[in-house]
View: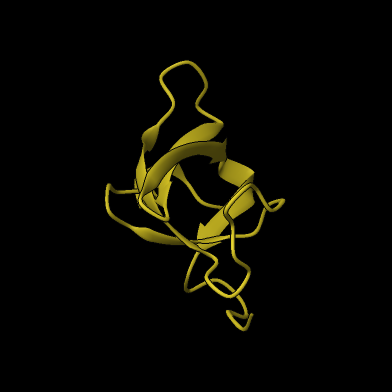
Length: 69
């Protein structure tokens, strides 16, 4: 699991959560923007040029595990 100390703005993460509108499985990477101000278990990420909110548990560091898609 990712810790708060590991997340820096601009860090590329692997999205492992449920597909959302516009998500493409062949491009599962999102860019960390910030933590949600109301809930530390949610984060804002950038995907496809837009900012979305997702759960911290739905992302992992690119270096964790198999990155094959």
